[in-house]
Image 1 (tube, rainbow, N blue to C red):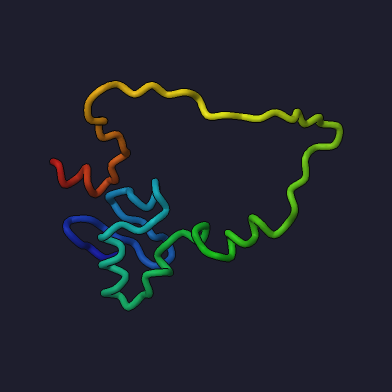
Image 2: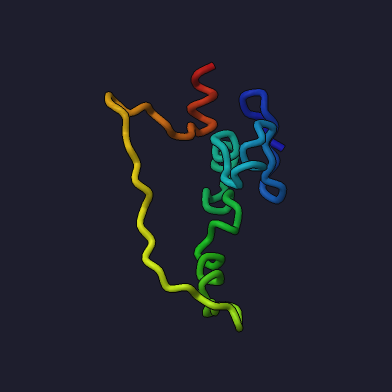
Length: 104
C-alpha cells in the first residue's frame, strides 16, 4: 500500500486505488502510475491484461461462421439522411475522468 495525494494505492497484485478509475476503466490512474514507477514497476504491468496483444490475437484466432439454417438477406444499406441545422455544431463528446475532475 502506497499513499499518494491522500489516496491509497495497492500494488502490484490488487491494482486498486481509492479514486476508483481502475475499477471502471481497467486502465491505471495517474496515482497508480506514480506509485508503480516509484516502486520500480514497469507501466505496462499496471494495465488490465484484456488490453494486451495476446487477448486481441486470441479474439481473432478462429473463424466466425454464421449459424446453420440462418438465411442472410441480400440488400444494400445506405446511411440515413441527416439534415443539419444552420449554425455551428455543438460540442458533443464524452469527457474523460481527468477532464471532469479538473473542472471542479
